[in-house]
Length: 332
Ligand code: GZL
Image 1 (cartoon, protein in one colour):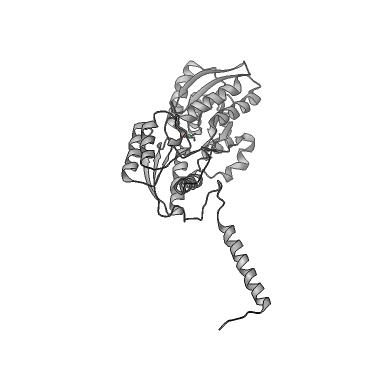
Image 2: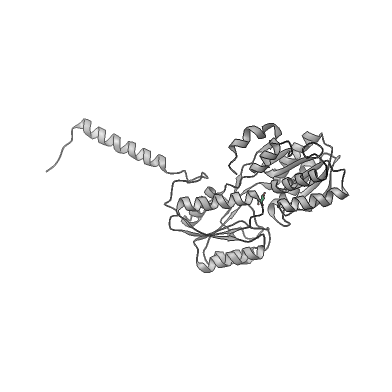
């Protein structure tokens, strides 16, 4: 028996179907860079290895959490490895992931060089490698699927530009470098040097690595202050070292934030608290909340979808004039 619907009812049914289709289409996350929070379809049954640098800073632990939380949200089985700051441990971890036949690897490389052999092994095993937060120097860029990171040279330059304005181009600077050979240490140094180049009365009077840790920043500052008591600025490649430097300055009887200007990079909550307390002058944000973008990239790599070789995460500058309003908004 054939059922004939009256025109008004047919129009209603068609309209409802179209509306439903539109709603469903609207629920689908855009294929762009937005974290696909609710969509579990693409990565549901994946096993992903995450080779992390370590836990040297509060930025780093926030990044670990972002990736772990996102894996859980998407139902991805995550194998986590903490390299304790050593490249050899990270290489071992990556080899371990390859041996276990994971679907993809997320790698936050400790240093920039020395990655070719292990990345080639991953490529041969057809396991895509997504780089997060730090880049590598390799001749063959097909050895990794994509890099999701901030522009560290720009961060260094932004810090310098803020300082040029603040000091009217006059400063005796102690620089606390990050881990030797790490992309953010190399690039934040370069960007900062570029930014002060046009100001002949701004000088880096000492520059040493504090390894991106609070203890490192404190110890190096203690030692350098003994030789360079006339320093007027401390520029640290991350907030944790700056917080260590603040302690060293206080112990040396100096007032951080006024006797000595302190500026750094990352934008962690502790830095905002230090700015509100008047002890840190400026921080350049560098977001560790990379989980959503990292797993979007994993999904695309697995689906064979083309993607950019690098996604630059945008950063902003904060100082004491904006810190108080921003503090409640900080997610890390
Ligand atoms: C930046 C990241 C750096 C942070 C540090 O992407 O690699 O390493 O600035 C961290 O705090 O330890």
